[in-house]
Length: 253
Length: 103
Image (cartoon, rainbow over all chains, first blue to last red; front, side, top):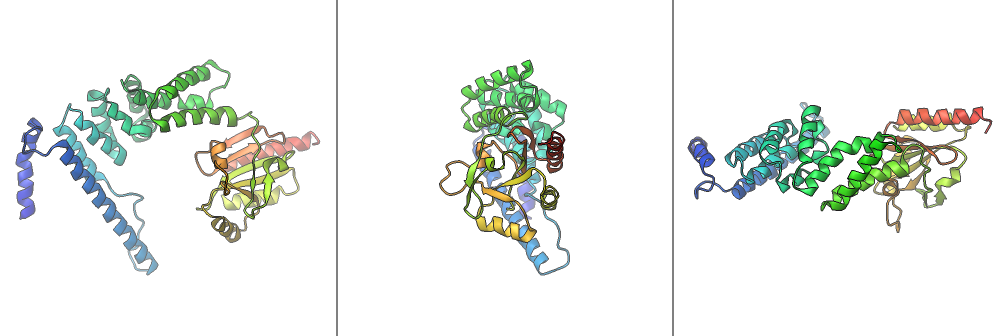
C-alpha cells in the first residue's frame, strides 16, 4: 500500500518536475544523483550476495547452481538515469545522468549518446566518458560511432577532442605504413593533442600507442631484457640471440 | 594456451628456437604452481622483480595479456599481438627460413 501511494506520488510529481526542476519541492540534480549512487551501491551488494550464494550452492553440489552475470544488471539504474536526464533536458545537469548510462549500461547507451550529441556536444563534462569515446563502435553501430566521434572532435573541450581524435586515428597508428603520409599526419595531430590535453591517462595512451608502433612494430629491432628468472637467476633475452624467439607475456592469475 | 605452447617447445627443441616467458603473476609461488600443475617447459623473466622500477611489460608497451612478440635471430620483430597460433606460424616460418639459408 505504501509503495502504491509512493508510486502515485511520483506519478503526480513527475510532470511537474519536468516543467520546473528548480522548484523547491522537486529533487535537485544532486539529490537525484545521490539516489542513483545509492541504488548502484545496492545493486552491487545484491549482485555480490547472489554470487556468494551461487558459489556456495555449487560447492555444496546443490541443484540449480547456475552461471552468474559478470557484473550487476544496471538496467533499472540506467532507466532511472535516462528519465532524470529528461527532467533536466537541455541543462548541463543532464550530462551526468547520460554519461552514467553510457558507462554502466551499454545496451542503453545509444539513446543517451543521441541526446549528448544533440544537446551537449560542447560540455566539458563529456571528457568523463573518457576511454568510452574510444570504444563507441562496440556499443553503438559503427556508423553512429563514427558520426559521434566526428562531432566530438569539434568539442570546445581539449580532452574531449583528444579522445575523439585518438578514436579516429588509432587504427592508422596501429597499422598504416610507417613511412606513409597517413601515418605521419595522424602522428602529428595526435602528438599535438597529447601536449594539449589535461587528462594524463589520455596523453599516456596516445604516446604509448605511438611508442608501441615505432619501437615495437613489425620490422623494429627489439631491446634486450635483463632480469631474473623465477628461481632468481639472472639472465638476458640476448642469451638467445641467434635463435628465433617467441617472447610470451603470460600469467596464470 | 598452455598445451599449445608446451607442444611448441617440445616440437622445436632441436631447432634454433626459444620460447621465453615474462611472467606477470603477483607472486613467484603462484607462477611456480602454474608451472608445476601444467608441466610448463619454458624459462620466464619475473615481470617486475624486486627493485625494478618499471615492469618489463611496461618497457615493452604491452597492454593486453597474453601478448606474444616473435623475434628473428637478429632481434628484429616479425610479429606482435595476441594470437598465439599466428605467432607460432610466423616463428616456424622464420626457423624454416634459417634452415634453408643454412644458418
